[in-house]
Length: 289
Image (cartoon, rainbow, N blue to C red):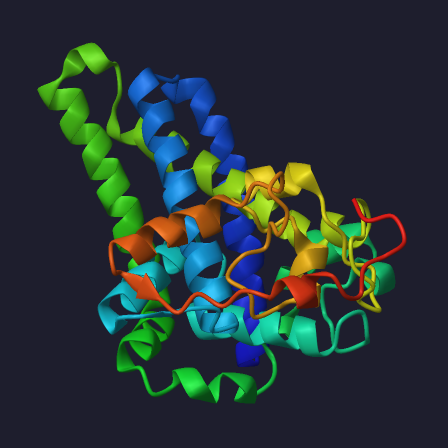
């Protein structure tokens, strides 16, 4: 079995296992603290994907210290959406080869379900040299997260279980436990974040509005933007891929950008790239939405 085929089998098994593990809630029940932890992990790890994997590593939309870069990349890794170099490589290919045969998750070519989740189970997505991420190889800490990605995920699962077990023992009135916290904090939270993120690939190339003529089917979808902290303004992103801000209009909520602005005030990030007013006024469709 080739490495690509083996990785494909692992991903299929893992994704099926996570979806089935959701049913564990029937036996573990639910508690307020489990819902809070699950919700917090959804938001924190989503920010790791949007601000870390996507806007920082894939597009260099802002600058930051290496410690902050590592922290954001670690959060992205904990989302269980793939190791950082693998994720960034595929996303860069998506922009370079949008809706061509080399864009592996294009719904206009391969259909909704394949673009949404099926491509991650195809051995084709594990083939190639990832030569388009050479700029990130100078960071040994990112290479370490790539290499030890399975260990990172295992440690996350252990930590979430341990949190639930400790809370259940120290504060029994909370009504939680290790298995319950694992189901809600890891499995349900992760699967929800998976499908929200995957909708950027699938839904945002099929349904929504185009504000800019980008030569592709990318759209802005406010529902996806809400679920993904701003990533659903995908047509804007295809027009200005290096921008740290995706919601370009005042009414286009972009929680990732707002958080980056706060981090900028705290001097954790700097040099946020933004299109100028002149640039934003060009390339508009006749009836922007």
